[in-house]
Length: 259
Length: 327
Picture 1 (cartoon, rainbow over the protein chains, first blue to last red):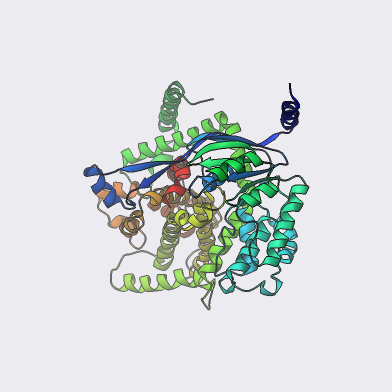
Picture 2 (cartoon, each protein chain N blue to C red):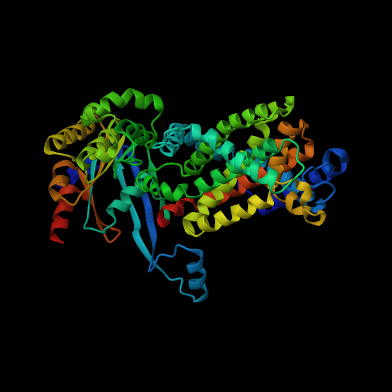
């Protein structure tokens, strides 16, 4: 047994001791891409009678399996349309997979699409509470965290201004501040390591680094090889909804670049 | 434990026996006097009886067999209570956002409609109904609640598409919040109702304290119908236009502004099969007439509510994972 193999074995043993906090088992996701959208009963009946009810089946994910261990920063790479975002949404519970299962241990903070439930007619304050409620926080929790959220977003002077008067950067800041106000067990991020101006982006990155240091498991989707290389310990390469490769970041990045 | 065919058969036989026993031994007087359809609608009665017994037993069976399955649902619900509250609040705020009188409209609306209808119907068509304004308003409040609750919850899932595409939330929260905010409206318009009773010097009976019971029944029914419609509308958007017409027809088939007696004897079964007629009758019994509703009325109203809720929940839960693909 040579030393390189030994090293590998040791690492593997180390990994086995850590718990897998995200287990994705044989997940497949089917979308029906209707050639034309059939929204109405009349259309449906007509199409049905003419036997034109064709659905184009599209497997956005097929048979995806992997595990993310506790405390690790895990990257998902892939070209546009490879199924990365769908995979994240399946893990976050937004989509229910057509086949397979996702097992998750711990509280998840999704940084996939910020600002769920934001209504432009309402003030920043009202929207913070709404968005917090959507993420499953209680009223007590939101009252406690409100101060901190507004501090981080640095939007106190616009507290009672309707969101429609905000710039898109400000809305993004607010969304980010709410989503990261928790110390989650698992953070799921889709390309948004920074919103707003460069100052705010730096603070976002700080915050995420802090989380990682405190033991948060991070699942990170990115096009950028640089980001994945600098942050992730292991990675997954997606290709047309399938797992093309899965392992050490270096190998995966090399493979991704070569394709 | 899965519910297999043997269990289901046993259960149906049990239901039949129970229905037969109730039919045989519950005093006829308690069952027969159905003010919504005196003397008629025998088949309707049997249907209702069967439905109520099977509804109650099905829920009991479900609770016993699936107790552990229900637990996570209860946990999720308690986790998202704050969201429910926020959604109700938002409904209210956005409804009255730009209006000067704000929430006062909830009170004014039924009052003004009632005044218009009273003028129309007490001068144009003469029905001999004592305390016509109260009679009218009671029907209008119940029907108005149902129509508002179902109409708003019908589009709730589509309107909430932006939310359910971004984060996971229990989907039933969307129609539930709409029905609950209609309920708040209903409670406010009850103030208008009491006001009208007071102004018209209509008699007040102690049975008015039973008012929460019919409201509970109609709430169950509206929630069930609302969930059913909200799930169906995601797949067929046309329903929202169609339903407006159905509601209009339903208004005329319900004795809101006319007495039930003007409907010919041989068509009364339509009233007996109309759940809203029963709810309104119950409501009027306790407020307008001071009659203590009998067992039969309770069975009918409860069975309508339970069956609608069970059906609505079933259809909604079966399809909720597909919603996001169609929005």
